[in-house]
Image 1 (cartoon, rainbow, N blue to C red):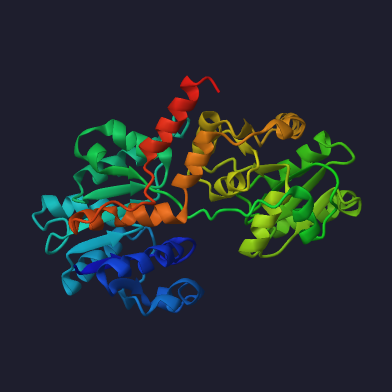
Image 2 (cartoon, one colour):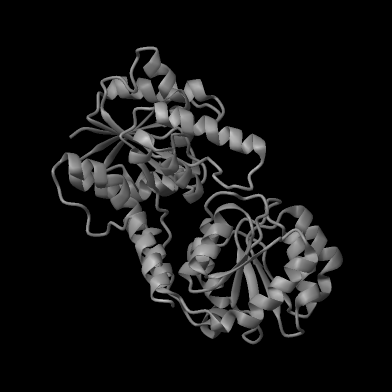
Length: 409
């Protein structure tokens, strides 16, 4: 079977996903053709994630570089790659823009893809939240209509809330819709004392913290003010990741006393994956103060993989996950008084947190093995192979949640 992967994007997680998928896919079908851009081929992401895989994949830098908003160019890139390689099966792990015009090409009589191969796509955008703004709801409607008109065999949605909108849409879109896992690695789960020793930070006290890119999308300013308002003298706030310069200046001018007293612990730098995991296991409570983030949060998933409860913003995907799976608390992270009260509550109650069976099933779903099983399922079915032993579907997660609720746990 001849497989083509088309990936117009390369920054962030896009090549990381291929790093997981390609070796197992090559075990099934041999060398895989991967169409990418020349910018992607020359990127640090290619060097890190894809260059080691050149024995199992042929990387073709033939796609014209384009912005994510250049829907026509991105769609034409995909069509031209399909025409050039004549594959039996196509995977487009990030195909939001490409999908938006597929229906129009079908209506115009040009088909979904040249040669009509079986094809699957990943959809990363879409809000799905009831509290989304009117213009965002209008975007959701546009996305759903174009996805309905597309010819994809399967459509993999990153955002649970938007996936649920697609399932509620009904018809062929609902039948093709699947929720996409994410490659969240298992955390070694060192105990707090050992984690803090390895990091060289004070071992006593209660820690709340975050490990992420600490840019302006995170309410770090409100977190600092709320922590000062809420904290006992022995409580500590840990911030790990590159700080936006405005946050670094704020800390220097207004929170230097917390730094001197070891109440504010800073790792203002890139944090490698092993250290990132140790930071999370050093915490009593992880926090994700992302007031404008509606989509899936890998930061939150990494925190629960470390066995830590989470204090989150009360919007979108994060609020829904905390409400359903009960692994923490939510609040308005832009209101300092409300945020401070939530910090006190979380630190006072964190020792009572116990990981539930639904959360364990959730972590099985959001795993690298399951990401691979998810993307290879259609190909395995076409090849008359049994499903992967690592496969965990979203309905299996929901059944665990329902069973847990019926048991009254």
